[in-house]
Length: 91
Length: 200
Image (cartoon, rainbow over all chains, first blue to last red; front, side, top):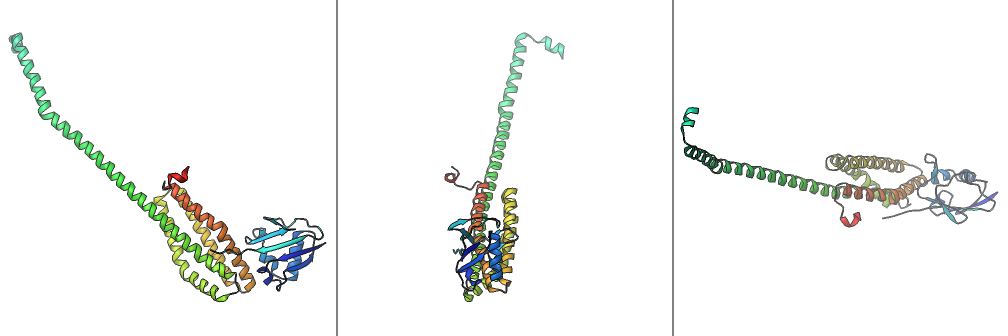
């Protein structure tokens, strides 16, 4: 199943400035693994294996809906759109 | 003795009794009464002095608690902005700002940590054991964040370093900032230094 991933500018440093990437997968875990194969280090940038959760500054969106504390086993459908946005806060 | 007494007439007995009572009243009124009065006054004066001393002592404790809360707030926010600055600029590619923030962090963090730990010890004698435990737990959290900042500083891959700082930035901005506010309010509440308006 084809999944379209959008990454914010800050995360695109790892993806060689690509902000739209297409990968194959049926779960969020598949998507992360596929992204990490294409751009080594990407999974670690956004996901903490020790906390088993996305890193605090990462917001994950599935088909435009922001989600928190997502399981990597979330099933995905063909054509789903995933976004990873890194927030930077000042002050 | 009995014979002498019996030998006296009833009028004379009455006179002796009256004289005895007169003597007793005289003794009570003239000697014992001033003594008792003086004793009571001394006790009241002692009690008032002890009360005033206790009030003075309590006022000193309240002043010390209030001063400590201000100092603690200053330490918390000094640390928070020191860490936030390095984490914020660590997310950017602009190396100059990051380097300046990292130098400031490295040179100042030991001073801030020692002040925080000193305050933790002082917390135990001025506030409750619960407040002391809360501050000690927060101190350990600050140490943990310091470890994370140092790990991010030592990261050689610039992208990984920026992402690590991004995570620290987000954690300090949201979670830690709220914790600081909550801790300070909790300590003030513990010492009864919260305005009645906020207790409602």
